[in-house]
Structure formats: C-alpha cells, structure tokens
Length: 346
Image (tube, rainbow, N blue to C red; front, side, top):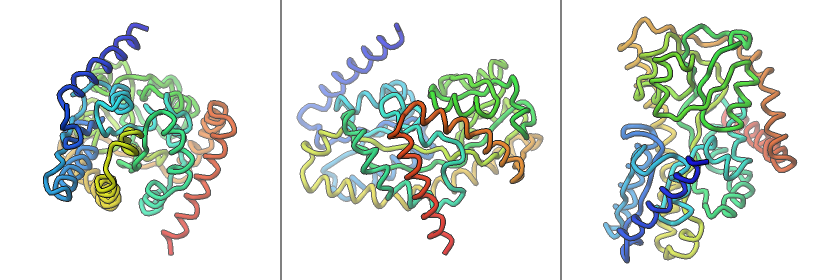
C-alpha cells in the first residue's frame, strides 16, 4: 500500500516539475523515457527517433531521452505519459497489463512466430493491435504508436532445463505481471516477480534460480556471470510498445508535427527489426568470449513441443482474466500471425 502511495506521489511530483521545466516550450522539446539502460535496443530506437525528429523538424523540435531509472519505474513512466509530463515512453506488455489487460496476450507463450518477417508485419500493421487494442489504450489516455520485438526470450539458469518436470521447485524471475506468472506456472516453475534492477543480485544470492530476457539484456546486465546455462526454448519474443499521451497527439500537435511523428514511427519499423537482430547476435558473441564455460542449449522440436503443450494452461488463464474480449483478440492475432507466416514464406 505504501509503495503504491509513494509511486503515485512520486509520479505526480515529477509530473509537476517536468511540466514546469518545459513551460511554454513544451511543444519544442519531446521527452522520451525508456525501460532500459543506454546502449540497449530501446535506447537505439529512442536515439534514432531523436535524430530523425530533430532532422525532419529542422531543429524546431529537440528530443531528450531518459534511460532506465532516470524517471522511476516502468509504471511511473506510463503514468507520466498519461499525465502529459513526458511525451513518449516504452512500455512492455508485462507492465501495461495493469492498465490494459488484453495487451498481456503478448506474454502468452508460443504465440508469436519464429519468423521475424511475420512478426514485423503483425506488430506494425495488425488491425487487432492498432484498432481494437488501440481503443482500449485511448480509454487510459494513451496512444499506441507502435510495437516491436527486442529478441527471443532466453532462459539463464543454474541447472539444465529440458522439460517441464525440470522446472519443479525452480524459482524463475518474472516481471510483476499476472500473465507471466501464469505462463511459468504452466511450465511447472515457481515464478518469482522481482524488479529488473535486483535480478543480478537475486541470481548471485540464490534468491532466484533463473531469469528470462533477450540476449542483449543478458549481456548488458551481466546475468550470464551468475548463471550456468543459457537455454533457447522458443517460447516468446520480448516485445515493447511506444506510447504517447492520447490528448497531446490528437489536440496539442499541429497537423505538420503529427505528420512528422507518424513518418518517423513508420521509418523506424525497418530500422529496429534489423538493429535488434544485430544487437542480439553481437551480444551473444560477447557472452561466449566472456564466459566460454557457460553451457548453451537449444531445445529440440520435441522438447519445445512439451513446453508448448504445457503452456495451454496459460492460454486458459489469459481468457479467464480477460473474458470474451481477450479470447477474440487471441483468436484474431493467431489468424493474423498465420497469414503473415504464409506471406513471409512466399
């Protein structure tokens, strides 16, 4: 209770100070807060966003990027956007689920494709995401601008995991997300929500037995240093959204600024898909060089199938949480993904 009160107070106080600092020039400075540290995939996106906006506006608009921890937690960032104190933020579905429950569909295991091209088509063009879910976002004073993946979620663990039975009694760190908790319960693990900044210490002190993140995050946060295994199970791509304040987008921007913003978001779609792949490939090589004794396991199709079958319980949980609207979104997304996979294979 005290944590919630403090967070609300902190976000409100920060909103006042940021708004005061912006003053009359708020239209000329756009603030973009990310959930990750400098050098991350989100930072690459935000820095390219900054470059394009400043270039296309002829310097009339400047963009200030705030890395992880600068303005508070992920929940704080979203709240600051809804209050209009900052203009943009990355917000992962795991955190956004407290505002828009249905967005947790992207935490459902084995939903997205193993094809990056198929995922790109869905995450940037989906009517389910930008029309149906988009309306839910607007009810929370948020405008969903885009979604993109940051790479396959890989397990780092202190033991070999090849079947759901291997997860028995295993403390797996997750975000504070009901759907992610349900996902790892379905795999047979003991999900343990923990803030991102505490994960390294949790692994080091054996408070948790493993964690899951894209490769670039595993490298930059040094999680591999306190793990014995890296395991690819194909269960999930880590996705993030870019959100802005709905009223600011609709009413405060001029037509010219809105057109500029939309063009930058569209231009970044190709850029970030290539960058995230490059980052993850390069960071994996760094991990291999830094800790050659780290055991790396890619589960076979048969082994993955066992986890996929177990994850059906998580799908049921998603529908229980979200009702008919959630079932409809899940069904529509699966159809869109299947169609995108067919197009990508042509």
